[in-house]
Length: 448
Image 1 (tube, rainbow, N blue to C red):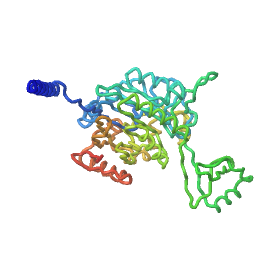
Image 2 (cartoon, one colour; image 1 turned 30 degrees about the vertical axis):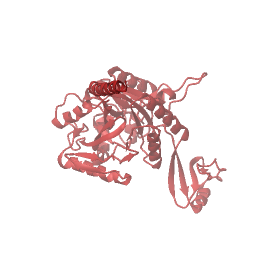
Image 3 (cartoon, helix red, strand yellow; image 1 turned 45 degrees about the horizontal axis):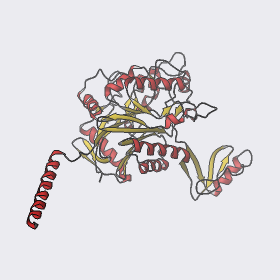
Image 4 (cartoon, rainbow, N blue to C red; image 1 turned 45 degrees about the vertical axis):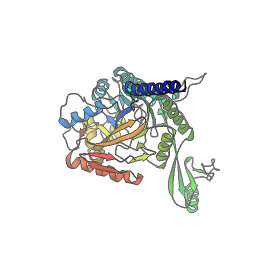
């Protein structure tokens, strides 16, 4: 009996082993989820993109189309003469015809941020028309809405390899661009998702006494305290000052805005495989780094900045990429069709007889800085949420080309231009400890 029991036990073990082998053959191990992202900076598009066939242009377009998600910043409004131009001082009002939405879709864009200082260039009607045309062609957008709740909410793109979330905000904008919350007794205001900033000027004791003397009346009593409890003063109702060991400016983000955006990141992390955060920030002060780190800590997989219209550095923080500014991607101010009357006056041109080309000639030298026309397109590959690969494709916007030609339209750079762009990124990123190697006409980022 004992021998029979042993034989039965042995046969059972053999059978289980055989089943185990068969199951391993029949049910393959689960594959990692891989998602690729192509990201670009500011898109100022006043002409069609689809008619052209230059080799290095089409290579770039194919990269955008190849990615699981292609992202850019929608810098301007899309409509057919809808709304009224907002008064913006020296800043121009950007508007593009409805077919530009179709051109963006042709180029491969899937998601675009809208929170920036041009989102309401044609006030609320222009904003809503822009959303309508992006919706029409199937481009997901974030950062603006009919109220603050809608503007702050993540937007989601369903790719074949996973779900990508985008939260878009801006720290540079006219005050009347802000969206507001809805209440039971008051509807919300359409606008953008803000990250408001406060600047405090740090001065010496002697400086403060001089400021008091300059004022037409004595300085008012301290208006509260800063975040570390020091007294803060206002000067004739303008600016904030505090005494410090040396002169300087401290820029701080509104804590309520930070918390609202972080809440959106945490929500998106529960609902998507990859979370992207974009910020339009002309001011690239220390607050931006703190904000970027907070977003990554809350679950964002990358942060993409825009605003200065030039490249700034790349940081790898906790294994996640932070692009503080990607500069321009399409830069076609030279072929704008409309400029408001007060802008002509401000630059010394006749507001009735001048045209956009006259305006371009006034500002051509200012816009001709090479750094505005050289950029990168990052290609990011995430595997199960972890950054696996990061390649920087150098891009030129063809400074020096004729106005009617490819000026402002992006091409993959090669040769000396490609090497120059990547070397510039190496210099800009070295303060963050980021290591970038130039190889085969691209920049390869070390991510371990």
